Length: 143
Image (cartoon, rainbow, N blue to C red; front, side, top):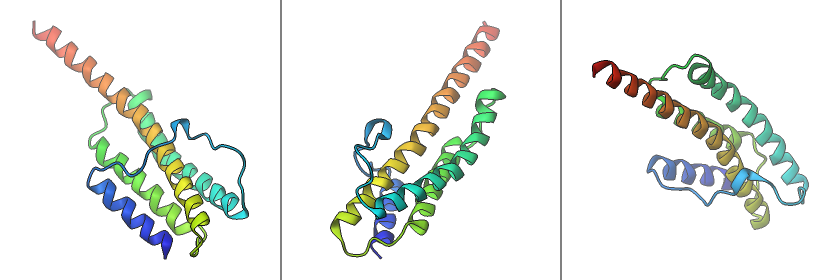
């Protein structure tokens, strides 16, 4: 139940364009997992990142390898991110009523979101670069 609440709160905040939490730079966990629950969440996070990575790889091939602009990139990126959060919430073990365990869940959710978002930001900036190059080429041809 707690997990569902956090997922809904996260999705509502994202849909309203609000920042969900402060992100940890580079998502470097400090220390090891303090509990079996933390280890379980780390495994779930890893599998969700792998699945999201497949979708991100498709975008990367289009943008980086082919040099093409992806129509609706923002919507696709939003779908990938939201799907990753939903997959994590569904696959993660129940936190119960323990506040410390819920805190661990929140941290892993933040790490997941930051990891997916970082990969998508790279592609976003590459897309902007491609758009700038195309606009400059058109401008030079028109002159």
